[in-house]
Length: 90
Image (cartoon, rainbow, N blue to C red):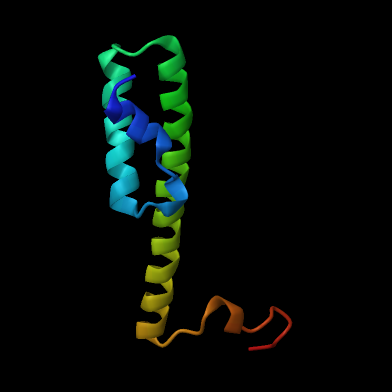
């Protein structure tokens, strides 16, 4: 197994920032598309790719929440937790 593949498999997605996880995922996709890995290596890369994709999604979801909160704050809108309940008359 090449050092590059071993490094990709050894990386802990939870410790990576978005760019690192995205770049590692892109490298894995390239390795899988190249077709030069064994079946066992391909499966291990696929599993790591799934973990990296989930990490990227987590980063993007968190960024979306932060952007929504910043947009609400800039507009002077209450946070979602500060919204009146539906039983308050208007």
